[in-house]
Length: 372
Image 1 (cartoon, rainbow, N blue to C red):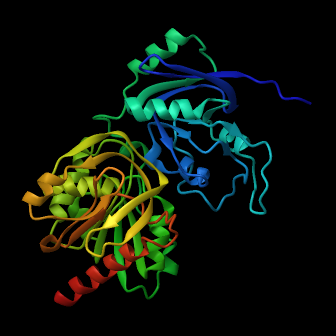
Image 2: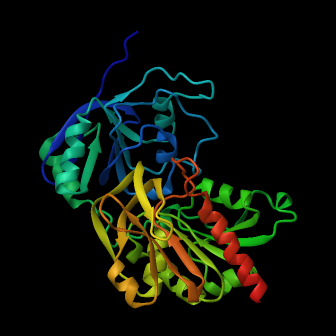
Image 3: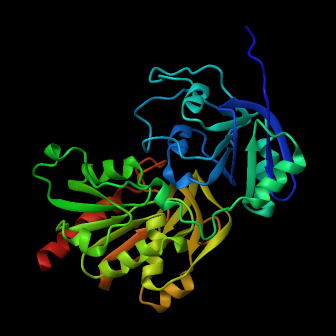
Protein backbone atom coordinates (compact mmCIF):
# COMPACT_ATOMS: atom_id res chain seq x y z
CA UNK A 1 0.00 0.00 0.00
CA UNK A 2 1.40 3.40 -1.01
CA UNK A 3 1.65 5.82 1.88
CA UNK A 4 -0.26 9.06 1.36
CA UNK A 5 2.06 12.03 1.00
CA UNK A 6 1.39 15.10 3.14
CA UNK A 7 2.69 18.48 2.04
CA UNK A 8 4.94 20.50 4.35
CA UNK A 9 6.71 23.85 4.08
CA UNK A 10 9.66 25.66 5.62
CA UNK A 11 9.45 29.47 5.51
CA UNK A 12 12.39 31.77 6.23
CA UNK A 13 12.16 35.24 7.74
CA UNK A 14 13.50 36.76 4.51
CA UNK A 15 10.34 35.61 2.70
CA UNK A 16 11.77 32.55 0.98
CA UNK A 17 9.61 29.39 1.22
CA UNK A 18 10.57 25.78 0.42
CA UNK A 19 7.99 23.08 -0.14
CA UNK A 20 8.38 19.37 0.50
CA UNK A 21 6.78 16.24 1.91
CA UNK A 22 6.17 15.59 5.59
CA UNK A 23 7.84 12.74 7.44
CA UNK A 24 8.30 12.27 11.15
CA UNK A 25 5.65 14.06 13.23
CA UNK A 26 2.98 16.40 11.93
CA UNK A 27 2.83 19.87 13.43
CA UNK A 28 4.49 23.27 13.37
CA UNK A 29 7.66 24.59 14.97
CA UNK A 30 9.79 27.71 14.74
CA UNK A 31 13.54 28.03 15.21
CA UNK A 32 16.76 29.20 13.64
CA UNK A 33 17.46 27.22 10.47
CA UNK A 34 21.05 25.97 10.08
CA UNK A 35 22.80 23.39 7.92
CA UNK A 36 24.99 20.47 8.97
CA UNK A 37 27.57 19.02 6.57
CA UNK A 38 27.96 15.59 8.22
CA UNK A 39 27.46 12.51 6.04
CA UNK A 40 26.59 10.26 8.99
CA UNK A 41 25.74 10.87 12.64
CA UNK A 42 22.17 12.13 12.16
CA UNK A 43 21.07 10.39 15.36
CA UNK A 44 23.81 12.10 17.37
CA UNK A 45 22.82 15.43 15.78
CA UNK A 46 19.15 14.97 16.60
CA UNK A 47 19.90 14.20 20.26
CA UNK A 48 22.55 16.89 20.79
CA UNK A 49 21.02 19.38 23.28
CA UNK A 50 23.11 22.12 21.64
CA UNK A 51 20.57 22.12 18.78
CA UNK A 52 17.71 23.26 20.99
CA UNK A 53 16.06 26.23 19.25
CA UNK A 54 17.30 25.21 15.78
CA UNK A 55 15.88 23.56 12.68
CA UNK A 56 18.62 21.41 11.15
CA UNK A 57 19.13 20.95 7.41
CA UNK A 58 21.32 18.01 6.41
CA UNK A 59 23.41 18.73 3.30
CA UNK A 60 24.05 15.04 2.57
CA UNK A 61 21.24 13.96 0.22
CA UNK A 62 20.22 10.60 1.76
CA UNK A 63 19.51 10.41 5.49
CA UNK A 64 18.18 7.49 7.54
CA UNK A 65 19.74 4.65 5.57
CA UNK A 66 21.22 2.94 8.65
CA UNK A 67 18.26 3.51 10.93
CA UNK A 68 18.28 4.37 14.63
CA UNK A 69 19.48 2.49 17.71
CA UNK A 70 19.46 3.10 21.48
CA UNK A 71 23.26 3.26 21.81
CA UNK A 72 24.07 6.22 19.57
CA UNK A 73 22.03 8.87 21.39
CA UNK A 74 23.79 11.83 23.01
CA UNK A 75 21.03 12.70 25.49
CA UNK A 76 17.65 11.52 26.76
CA UNK A 77 15.76 12.60 23.62
CA UNK A 78 15.98 14.65 20.39
CA UNK A 79 16.15 18.42 20.97
CA UNK A 80 16.04 19.84 17.43
CA UNK A 81 13.02 22.01 16.60
CA UNK A 82 12.74 20.53 13.13
CA UNK A 83 14.61 18.39 10.61
CA UNK A 84 15.06 18.96 6.86
CA UNK A 85 16.50 16.46 4.34
CA UNK A 86 16.61 15.89 0.61
CA UNK A 87 15.48 12.28 0.99
CA UNK A 88 14.60 10.11 3.99
CA UNK A 89 15.56 6.50 3.26
CA UNK A 90 12.67 4.07 3.51
CA UNK A 91 15.16 1.23 4.03
CA UNK A 92 17.19 1.03 7.24
CA UNK A 93 19.98 -1.40 6.38
CA UNK A 94 22.36 -1.98 9.29
CA UNK A 95 22.77 -4.81 11.78
CA UNK A 96 22.57 -2.32 14.66
CA UNK A 97 19.34 -0.71 13.47
CA UNK A 98 16.39 -0.99 15.85
CA UNK A 99 13.99 1.54 14.35
CA UNK A 100 13.39 3.54 11.19
CA UNK A 101 14.24 7.25 11.33
CA UNK A 102 10.69 8.21 10.30
CA UNK A 103 9.19 6.24 13.21
CA UNK A 104 11.77 7.61 15.64
CA UNK A 105 10.90 11.19 14.74
CA UNK A 106 7.16 10.48 15.04
CA UNK A 107 7.71 8.88 18.45
CA UNK A 108 9.62 11.95 19.67
CA UNK A 109 7.28 14.50 18.07
CA UNK A 110 9.93 16.01 15.78
CA UNK A 111 8.49 17.75 12.69
CA UNK A 112 10.49 16.86 9.58
CA UNK A 113 10.32 17.56 5.85
CA UNK A 114 11.91 15.83 2.84
CA UNK A 115 12.00 16.42 -0.94
CA UNK A 116 13.40 19.87 -0.19
CA UNK A 117 16.07 21.42 -2.42
CA UNK A 118 18.64 21.35 0.39
CA UNK A 119 21.37 22.70 -1.90
CA UNK A 120 19.37 25.85 -2.55
CA UNK A 121 18.46 26.20 1.13
CA UNK A 122 22.07 25.73 2.23
CA UNK A 123 23.30 28.26 -0.32
CA UNK A 124 20.74 30.79 0.91
CA UNK A 125 21.90 30.34 4.52
CA UNK A 126 25.55 30.70 3.47
CA UNK A 127 24.85 33.92 1.59
CA UNK A 128 22.38 35.56 3.97
CA UNK A 129 23.25 33.88 7.26
CA UNK A 130 21.29 31.68 9.64
CA UNK A 131 17.69 32.88 9.79
CA UNK A 132 14.58 32.43 11.87
CA UNK A 133 12.20 29.98 10.21
CA UNK A 134 8.92 28.13 10.60
CA UNK A 135 8.35 24.51 9.54
CA UNK A 136 4.78 23.30 9.23
CA UNK A 137 2.48 20.56 7.99
CA UNK A 138 -0.58 22.51 9.17
CA UNK A 139 -0.31 26.05 7.86
CA UNK A 140 0.70 26.02 4.19
CA UNK A 141 0.04 29.71 3.55
CA UNK A 142 3.33 31.32 2.59
CA UNK A 143 2.51 34.78 3.94
CA UNK A 144 1.33 33.39 7.26
CA UNK A 145 4.38 31.16 7.70
CA UNK A 146 6.82 33.97 6.94
CA UNK A 147 5.10 36.17 9.54
CA UNK A 148 5.42 33.39 12.11
CA UNK A 149 9.11 33.02 11.30
CA UNK A 150 9.68 36.77 11.74
CA UNK A 151 7.83 36.82 15.07
CA UNK A 152 9.70 33.82 16.53
CA UNK A 153 12.26 34.69 19.24
CA UNK A 154 15.43 33.38 17.57
CA UNK A 155 18.55 32.74 19.67
CA UNK A 156 19.98 36.13 20.62
CA UNK A 157 19.53 36.83 24.32
CA UNK A 158 17.49 33.65 24.91
CA UNK A 159 18.46 31.28 27.74
CA UNK A 160 17.97 27.81 26.26
CA UNK A 161 20.24 26.09 28.80
CA UNK A 162 17.45 25.95 31.37
CA UNK A 163 15.37 23.94 28.88
CA UNK A 164 17.95 21.18 28.37
CA UNK A 165 20.04 20.97 31.57
CA UNK A 166 19.41 18.48 34.35
CA UNK A 167 17.54 19.57 37.48
CA UNK A 168 19.22 17.00 39.72
CA UNK A 169 22.86 16.03 40.22
CA UNK A 170 23.86 12.48 39.30
CA UNK A 171 26.85 10.16 38.92
CA UNK A 172 28.06 8.94 35.52
CA UNK A 173 28.05 6.00 35.29
CA UNK A 174 26.45 4.70 38.56
CA UNK A 175 28.60 5.47 41.60
CA UNK A 176 29.50 1.83 42.26
CA UNK A 177 31.43 1.78 38.97
CA UNK A 178 33.54 4.80 39.95
CA UNK A 179 35.67 2.87 42.45
CA UNK A 180 39.42 3.60 42.42
CA UNK A 181 39.23 6.52 39.97
CA UNK A 182 42.16 8.91 40.30
CA UNK A 183 40.22 12.17 40.02
CA UNK A 184 36.73 13.41 40.71
CA UNK A 185 35.36 15.78 38.07
CA UNK A 186 32.24 17.93 38.34
CA UNK A 187 30.55 18.50 34.98
CA UNK A 188 28.39 21.62 34.94
CA UNK A 189 25.51 20.50 32.72
CA UNK A 190 24.44 23.15 30.24
CA UNK A 191 23.24 20.49 27.79
CA UNK A 192 26.02 17.93 28.11
CA UNK A 193 26.46 15.17 25.53
CA UNK A 194 26.79 11.63 26.84
CA UNK A 195 30.05 11.11 24.97
CA UNK A 196 31.77 13.86 26.97
CA UNK A 197 30.87 11.90 30.10
CA UNK A 198 32.04 8.64 28.50
CA UNK A 199 35.40 10.18 27.58
CA UNK A 200 35.95 11.51 31.10
CA UNK A 201 35.07 8.12 32.55
CA UNK A 202 37.47 6.37 30.15
CA UNK A 203 40.17 8.89 31.14
CA UNK A 204 40.04 7.64 34.73
CA UNK A 205 37.72 10.25 36.21
CA UNK A 206 34.88 9.85 38.66
CA UNK A 207 32.19 11.94 36.98
CA UNK A 208 29.56 13.89 38.89
CA UNK A 209 27.09 15.94 36.82
CA UNK A 210 25.53 19.04 38.39
CA UNK A 211 22.78 21.43 37.21
CA UNK A 212 23.80 24.58 35.34
CA UNK A 213 22.26 26.69 38.10
CA UNK A 214 24.71 25.29 40.69
CA UNK A 215 26.79 27.90 42.52
CA UNK A 216 30.56 27.78 42.96
CA UNK A 217 30.09 26.85 46.63
CA UNK A 218 27.75 23.98 45.62
CA UNK A 219 30.40 22.67 43.27
CA UNK A 220 33.35 23.10 45.65
CA UNK A 221 31.38 21.28 48.36
CA UNK A 222 31.79 18.11 46.25
CA UNK A 223 35.59 18.36 46.66
CA UNK A 224 36.33 17.82 42.97
CA UNK A 225 39.78 17.83 41.39
CA UNK A 226 38.54 19.65 38.30
CA UNK A 227 35.53 21.19 36.56
CA UNK A 228 34.17 20.72 33.03
CA UNK A 229 31.93 23.40 31.54
CA UNK A 230 29.77 21.49 29.07
CA UNK A 231 28.38 22.22 25.64
CA UNK A 232 24.87 23.59 25.33
CA UNK A 233 22.49 25.61 23.17
CA UNK A 234 22.03 29.26 22.35
CA UNK A 235 23.60 32.55 23.29
CA UNK A 236 26.33 32.40 25.97
CA UNK A 237 25.52 36.00 26.95
CA UNK A 238 22.08 34.80 28.08
CA UNK A 239 23.42 32.47 30.78
CA UNK A 240 25.02 35.02 33.09
CA UNK A 241 24.49 32.78 36.10
CA UNK A 242 26.88 30.18 34.65
CA UNK A 243 29.39 32.89 33.75
CA UNK A 244 29.26 34.15 37.35
CA UNK A 245 29.80 30.63 38.71
CA UNK A 246 32.76 30.24 36.36
CA UNK A 247 34.26 33.54 37.54
CA UNK A 248 33.93 32.38 41.15
CA UNK A 249 35.74 29.13 40.30
CA UNK A 250 38.62 30.60 38.28
CA UNK A 251 41.98 29.89 39.86
CA UNK A 252 40.60 27.50 42.46
CA UNK A 253 40.57 24.31 40.37
CA UNK A 254 41.47 23.25 36.81
CA UNK A 255 38.68 24.10 34.37
CA UNK A 256 38.03 22.57 30.94
CA UNK A 257 35.40 24.27 28.74
CA UNK A 258 33.81 22.62 25.70
CA UNK A 259 31.83 24.53 23.02
CA UNK A 260 29.34 26.67 24.98
CA UNK A 261 31.62 26.03 27.95
CA UNK A 262 34.46 27.60 25.94
CA UNK A 263 32.35 30.69 25.26
CA UNK A 264 31.25 31.01 28.90
CA UNK A 265 34.85 30.67 30.06
CA UNK A 266 35.79 33.44 27.63
CA UNK A 267 33.12 35.69 29.11
CA UNK A 268 34.24 34.82 32.65
CA UNK A 269 37.76 35.91 31.67
CA UNK A 270 36.39 39.24 30.42
CA UNK A 271 36.08 38.55 26.70
CA UNK A 272 33.02 39.15 24.55
CA UNK A 273 31.16 36.72 22.31
CA UNK A 274 29.53 37.48 18.97
CA UNK A 275 27.20 35.67 16.59
CA UNK A 276 28.65 34.03 13.50
CA UNK A 277 26.96 34.54 10.13
CA UNK A 278 25.81 30.95 9.70
CA UNK A 279 27.73 29.13 12.42
CA UNK A 280 29.81 25.99 12.28
CA UNK A 281 27.81 22.77 12.07
CA UNK A 282 29.30 19.57 10.70
CA UNK A 283 31.95 16.88 10.99
CA UNK A 284 34.66 18.13 8.63
CA UNK A 285 36.02 21.40 10.05
CA UNK A 286 39.84 21.68 10.04
CA UNK A 287 41.29 23.19 13.22
CA UNK A 288 44.97 24.03 13.73
CA UNK A 289 46.75 23.58 17.05
CA UNK A 290 49.00 26.66 17.15
CA UNK A 291 51.49 25.01 19.51
CA UNK A 292 52.18 21.85 17.51
CA UNK A 293 50.99 22.87 14.05
CA UNK A 294 48.84 19.72 13.90
CA UNK A 295 45.54 19.96 12.07
CA UNK A 296 42.55 18.02 13.38
CA UNK A 297 39.34 17.24 11.54
CA UNK A 298 36.65 18.26 13.99
CA UNK A 299 32.93 18.05 14.68
CA UNK A 300 31.34 21.42 15.37
CA UNK A 301 28.01 22.84 16.41
CA UNK A 302 28.00 26.47 17.46
CA UNK A 303 26.60 29.78 16.27
CA UNK A 304 28.60 32.09 18.55
CA UNK A 305 32.31 32.78 18.93
CA UNK A 306 34.76 34.33 21.41
CA UNK A 307 36.40 37.61 20.36
CA UNK A 308 40.14 36.78 20.17
CA UNK A 309 41.39 40.39 20.37
CA UNK A 310 40.17 40.84 23.92
CA UNK A 311 41.61 37.48 24.99
CA UNK A 312 45.15 38.62 24.29
CA UNK A 313 44.70 41.68 26.52
CA UNK A 314 43.60 39.62 29.54
CA UNK A 315 46.51 37.21 29.60
CA UNK A 316 44.86 34.32 27.76
CA UNK A 317 46.59 32.47 24.94
CA UNK A 318 44.77 31.48 21.77
CA UNK A 319 45.66 27.82 21.22
CA UNK A 320 43.56 26.77 18.20
CA UNK A 321 42.10 28.45 15.12
CA UNK A 322 39.53 27.39 12.53
CA UNK A 323 41.16 27.07 9.12
CA UNK A 324 37.92 27.91 7.30
CA UNK A 325 37.50 31.41 8.72
CA UNK A 326 40.31 31.99 11.24
CA UNK A 327 37.99 32.17 14.25
CA UNK A 328 39.12 31.23 17.75
CA UNK A 329 38.77 27.48 18.43
CA UNK A 330 40.69 27.20 21.71
CA UNK A 331 42.30 29.17 24.51
CA UNK A 332 44.29 28.72 27.69
CA UNK A 333 45.04 30.76 30.80
CA UNK A 334 47.92 29.07 32.62
CA UNK A 335 47.80 31.24 35.75
CA UNK A 336 44.13 30.39 36.29
CA UNK A 337 44.53 26.71 35.34
CA UNK A 338 41.81 26.99 32.68
CA UNK A 339 41.61 25.97 29.05
CA UNK A 340 38.85 25.38 26.53
CA UNK A 341 38.03 24.22 23.04
CA UNK A 342 35.27 25.46 20.73
CA UNK A 343 34.70 22.24 18.82
CA UNK A 344 33.46 18.86 20.11
CA UNK A 345 36.47 16.68 21.05
CA UNK A 346 34.16 13.87 22.18
CA UNK A 347 32.63 13.51 18.69
CA UNK A 348 35.94 12.56 17.05
CA UNK A 349 35.33 12.41 13.28
CA UNK A 350 39.13 12.11 12.98
CA UNK A 351 38.32 9.72 14.76
CA UNK A 352 40.90 10.20 17.54
CA UNK A 353 42.35 13.61 16.67
CA UNK A 354 41.05 15.30 19.84
CA UNK A 355 41.56 12.58 22.49
CA UNK A 356 44.65 14.40 23.75
CA UNK A 357 42.49 17.20 25.17
CA UNK A 358 40.97 14.91 27.80
CA UNK A 359 44.50 13.68 28.62
CA UNK A 360 45.64 17.31 29.00
CA UNK A 361 42.80 17.94 31.44
CA UNK A 362 43.79 14.91 33.50
CA UNK A 363 47.43 16.03 33.50
CA UNK A 364 46.39 19.54 34.58
CA UNK A 365 44.46 18.06 37.52
CA UNK A 366 47.48 15.89 38.40
CA UNK A 367 49.81 18.89 38.47
CA UNK A 368 47.35 20.89 40.57
CA UNK A 369 46.94 18.01 43.03
CA UNK A 370 50.73 17.74 43.50
CA UNK A 371 51.03 21.45 44.27
CA UNK A 372 48.23 21.27 46.80
